[in-house]
Image 1 (tube, rainbow, N blue to C red):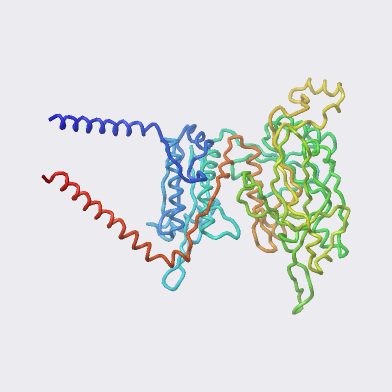
Image 2 (spheres, rainbow, N blue to C red):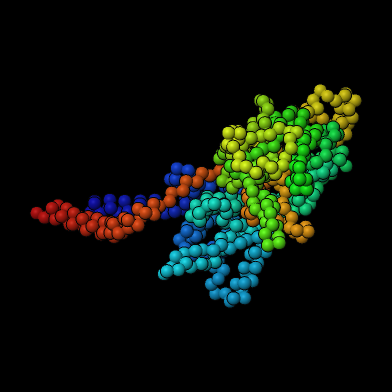
Length: 569
């Protein structure tokens, strides 16, 4: 009887523990991530975002239905992430997976596909091997987030050039948190970040900036054109100022406005062509173009902040875009061939720990100048983009002509490596006009609201300096009918990562929540050895089938033997 009471007591205690554990699990959530790179852990910035929701965010994910294993893994990763978000956000996170094909007529499917296209969401072709043929299935790796009557499209795939599908989908799975967290942030932000594109100094017009401006509007940014020359100051409510390829010199009044905007916490993205090199001018001049310094009068200002754009031109023989040149006639028409144009480098990055450039494809550039960093103890510098290992920088003045293409380049003369062309500056900046203004001018500024002179930035600031203005410029179709996507190079019909780079730069400058850091997750691709799988397939199938059965049999025999030995008198 004593043993029976003890057993009942232990049973009741265990049941109580289980009930208590279930009750606590409703209020306390934890998850152990055993991966070395913490691939499945939710970042603190994302946790704070979902915990502070005031209403329900609903996600409709269209990655459902008949698909191959690689897309099923992406679907499972999406499901796991949404479960985690719901664990932190509670009832304010809802989601459903929708098969866009099942149970719909052809007209309904066509209407849904058209609707997704209009929202900027594109399907993907899932190619699988069948019996002596390849099967192509249309899948929809996309989702739409809804919040208080607003919606935000999410493309789940992180497309990358020259990357196989397996690797691309693995990287896309890691970037899911960034995409969903960004969607929540854009839907819940009470104030749209305001981005100003400067004008008044020959900067790129709305045609050249058409795609990036539209993309920013789609991402819930407020975009404006700001003529600096017609304002007495740059309003501090602009979260960032983009100076895109100015052609005319800045006078001291305009430089002072930019300087004080920075000192009051403003963020600036400088995209500067330091030379007069221009491809359109080069094409119309058979003898080439004589390139000199553009003299924008910005050298002293950028130098004060910690950087310098050199008046040189980069030639890269390893990674550069081609240009079409006429080499003769054929069949009564011109014969055109493509030649590598060393002045159009493809820029890359080694800053794997910076979210702006992590996992980005090459960036297309034209007539690039190098960017040096200057010793400035209060400012941290990060090289974002650089050239390849076989290049050189040619100082201006210099004549640029097509004659350099008549013979193969000698690598001995292209012995400079990884020349920096884009730099991120972070820290407390010193004003260019410290100790340069009269007491009368300072007194006048102090008497007017918002014009008080600051000799240093009152908070830690950020700016990005790029030695090429064409990185942000999109091409226009003939007769300016429409704008090509930013990064699209019409000669080769290849799309580079210019758009992602510019958007990442702007988000890094304007976002203080740290969501862009979610792109910093390390990706370790653990692919199967296909040859070994083929050779050892039968052996591992037998092990997986027979080993569990053998273990059960051995345990059963051992347990019976133990009982007989213990209870047999």
